[in-house]
Length: 265
Image (cartoon, rainbow, N blue to C red; front, side, top):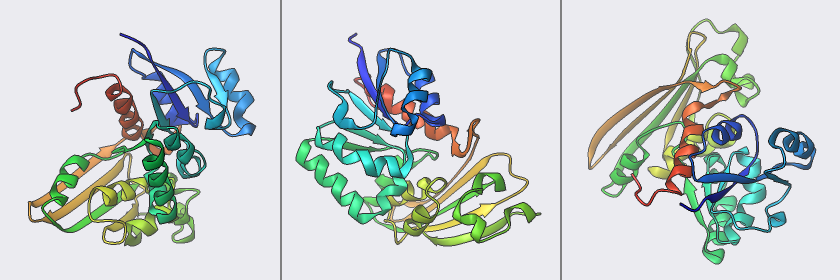
């Protein structure tokens, strides 16, 4: 089997986990990071991986590009990837709540022949939700419950005193589009659910901080012509980044495996 080559945008906790779990047959050949991170990233990766600051510096042709850099990374580099006709696996789906960015990415993909792969990230059931949409959906609600420390550094700190909580507290209720913009590091799932279902403005989101929580809990409730379903996941966060789910990193690994496998499940 011919070895395929991977480019990762970003090299934080998620990208390192993806790199560690890469399936045989796919090699990390390029990493794109900000200028300030180049030296440290080169030291981490050694001579076998090219460390770049832009997609334009890549002289080869990756078989797959995965975004592990958050919403700013997707906004900065996504168009260049798609305009080169490359497949781009997206984790920071919250960025797609920005209609202008979404439009530019879609236009770059159409013009260059690239393809956006919106990953399921920290949740399951997106295939079923998207299938249900074909028959008509009446309502979709997404709820997230995490420990207060997982909301630190986010807009949640302006809505509730995270250090003073003694019980589970809903601190936000609104649309998926607004949630994705206000909580970019925590609410990408809201955007993923919206993209698979009834859209950014029609999807209801509730966010909860619970001092007793030991895992990240995601609940999705959908109703429509197909019937009704409820999905609940209790996921472990990444060890080195409590704002990110382990399952989100594993969804990237799955995309990497699908780039190799002639059968997609």
